[in-house]
Image 1 (cartoon, helix red, strand yellow):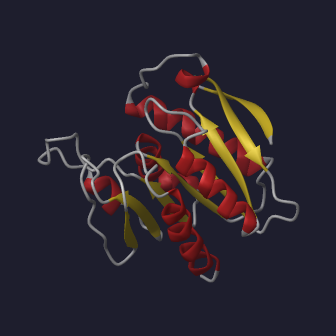
Image 2 (image 1 turned 60 degrees about the vertical axis):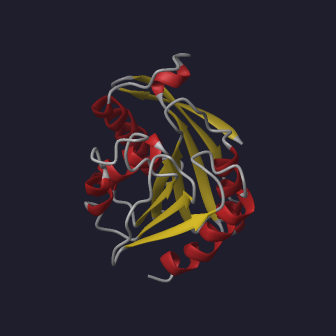
Image 3 (image 1 turned 90 degrees about the horizontal axis):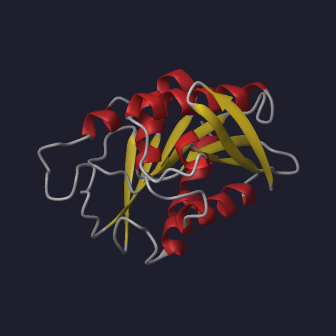
Length: 201
């Protein structure tokens, strides 16, 4: 694993690159609002993707690199993420089809910026559909706006809600809550089953 510091308009970000020997594609994943790139689901998905021939970059947002716990506003997260993806597209992941995604807040960032990132697909781990107890404040439109194939892996007891699927969005329910720690192997299996369908397109 190699840590790459990448300058963004919001300060330095980090890409923790797990490179495949002969990559067939790239995957860029972001972390949750108060979490990091060592979350169990991100680690599990990294292993699955590398086994399938993907080079995986786990992105640490500038606010997290700076040691702050509270995330930046959405537009700043999106701006930093876009700069990181552009850097990786031009260097470490040059020429590779790219899947973008992340867990929780990182999944939202990937959805909001998918159209500009040139991604062939989006992977959402624990998409926070709404704040707990406030289903009226839905973020379903962020998912619905994504025009490429999307996988959402969601805990059956997630207090942030259960997103709706669509013709382009598959939702797989696994045991557990928003942390996706209850059955990490179920998370890995969902992604393992989905990746070949994306590569075949």
